[in-house]
Image 1 (cartoon, rainbow, N blue to C red):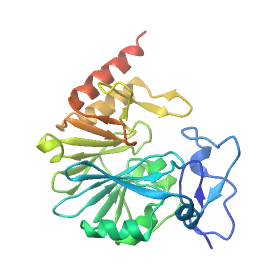
Image 2: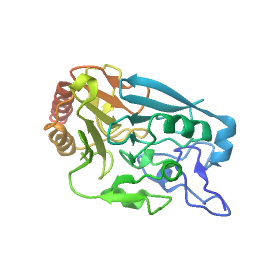
Image 3: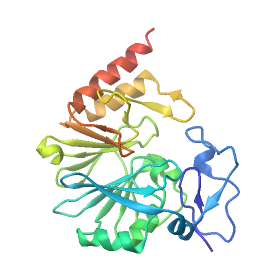
Length: 268
C-alpha cells in the first residue's frame, strides 16, 4: 500500500495498492490535468529526485521549499514562536534531515494551511512532528488523505498561538484562509496569504482569483469580503506562496487599493 502523490498538484492521497484513477484536486476547474495526462509519484521517489531548501525570510520566519521545482512549486513558511512553532502551508517533500533540522529549532507544534492546493503531504508532516493540522471546515471535501490529526475549524477566525490568528477570507476556496502574525515585520505585523491574496509582479498590489491556471476571476462581492476579512488586522508585509512573492511594506494599504481597483474593473 502506497500514498501516491499527484505530479501536477503535489497532493498525497490515502494509501492504495494502485495509483488512483484520477486526482480530484486537478480535475476541479481551479487546477488542471497536465498535457501528459494524470501522473503519480511517491514520497520515496521525491526523496531521490528532489531536495528541500531552507531560507530565512526574516527573523522568526523560515521558508522551506523544494529543488528542483515540483508540482505547483509553493514553499512553506515556519513561524518560530515562543509557545510553539507553526508551519504555514505545506509541501510534498519531507525527509529525515529536514525533520532533524526543524527539531533543532523547536519542532512544529501546529500546521495550518490556506487552501486545498497546499494540503500536499500534510499528514506526513503531522506524523513526523506529532502535531495537529488546522483546516477550515468549508474545505473538508478536498482532503484526500484523512487523518485523526486534522482539526476542522469553523467560523471566521481561530487563534492558534499568541499573536497568531487564522482568518477565513473565502475567495479562491470557500475556506480560503490567511494567517496573521502580529509580531512579524518588527512588530508591525505580517500576513501569510498563500494565494488567497496573490502577490503580483508589481509589489504595490495583490490580486484575487477563483482559478489561477484557468484565469477565472472572483466576483466583486467575494473580493470585497476578502478585504473586509483582513481589515481589522495591522500588517506591513505579505508573504505569498512562492519565494519571491512578497509585498515588503505598506501591505495593508496594498490590499485595500487592490480590492478597490478590482471591484472598479467590474463596473466598466
